[in-house]
Image 1 (cartoon, rainbow, N blue to C red):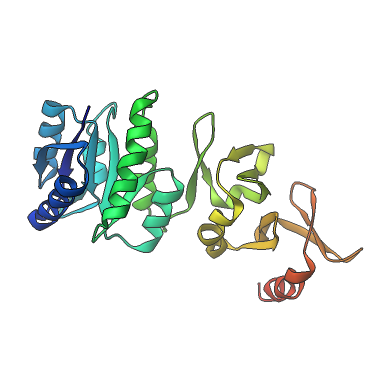
Image 2 (cartoon, rainbow, N blue to C red):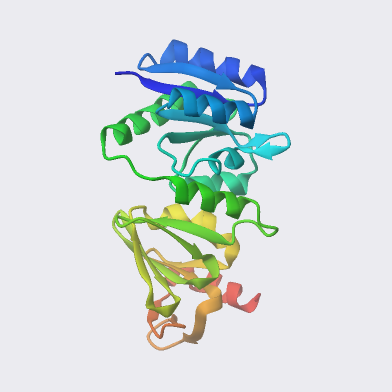
Length: 251
């Protein structure tokens, strides 16, 4: 059974390029329609009821998220096709949303389709919440103040400033937040380095990524350590010691 898709892009050349890639390299995908504006896309989705929508973020006079907001329930998958700035790409990636960066590569398109196929065969989830939340993130005056943590129980939007520290646990990462909140995410700690370090986070140890703003005390007993705002003491590795001290001095 083929995956039925709709392509939404304000540029006709973008639609043509993606259509050619799909027709030539994704034999299990059927394009059931295309649209170049929000109004036509909404009508087309309601008419065709696709399994998947390839959606451009930047549409003149609006954006792809305004299309998603028109649906009370999003019962189709979405892959963003975008040339959006870097912070948005990171936010999409770590919010468990799929994207393709223009110009689209064949291997990345095929990989994204495979992920959709696997999800399509499993229980369908309601995606409305995470798409709406990411839209609000991307429109904030100071973008990316929050991150969506994808856990076994669901998607949790959290303020970055509320994260005290992250702890590695093989292929999982534990997030420890204010008010005693604790979330487990099925991504490795290294995956969060790039996205959190610009927000005053520091990798003090191969197992710990901490929020500098939540340090209560730097200890010097048996090496360098830190006591965090939740009163937990964490070690600073010998390899990271000098860089960490310089970081603290620069604040």
